[in-house]
Every structure is written in C-alpha cells, then in structure tokens.
Image 1 (cartoon, one colour):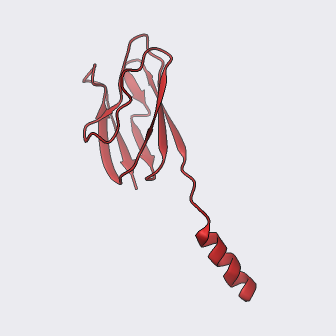
Image 2 (cartoon, rainbow, N blue to C red; image 1 turned 180 degrees about the vertical axis):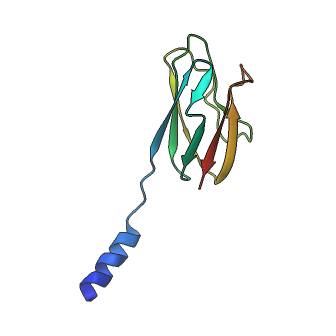
Image 3 (tube, one colour; image 1 turned 90 degrees about the vertical axis):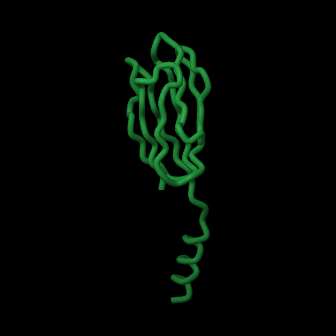
Amino acid sequence: MRTMLVLALLALAMPAYAANHAVQIKGMKFNPSKVSVAVGDTIIFTNADPMTHTATALDGSFDTGHLATGKSAKVKITAAGAHPFHCAIHSSMKGIVTAK
C-alpha cells in the first residue's frame, strides 16, 4: 500500500511535456486549418508555397512574421481558449488554434 502511494505521488509530480504540432502552408491554405493543443504546446508553421505568408493570431497571442518559401517559425501557445489566425498578407487564409 505504501509503495503504491509513493508511486502515485511520483506520477503526479512528474512534469507534463509540451507537444509539438505542425501546420504546413501550401496552396494558399493552412493545413490543418484547425489545431487543438494544450497550453504550453508549440506549433511549427512551415511555408511550402512559392510566396511569403504569415500566421498571425487575431488576438495578438502569436505571429510568425513573414515566412519566405521553405522557412518555418515556432510559436508557443500560452493561453487557453480559441485563437483564430490568418495570413496578414492574404486575408482569405484563415485557421484556428484551440488550446485547453
């Protein structure tokens, strides 16, 4: 019984590891356009289009800056909730990050 209690306490004390998620920008679209993450996770946006794009959260929580062809940027999600984003250059390109 004591051993099980110690193991349970150790399991609760272990740090949670943040996950990485990938979003590809191709064909004037974010793929996937809907991303579910945990707070603290990282999203890597990679531009596979022949033109420059951004991934800019409407609430200001993240912004990749301008990504040229073949370039990537990492953003860390620091707040729970819905974070709609778009390409600041091409306003028809939209997506949403939902963080819990």
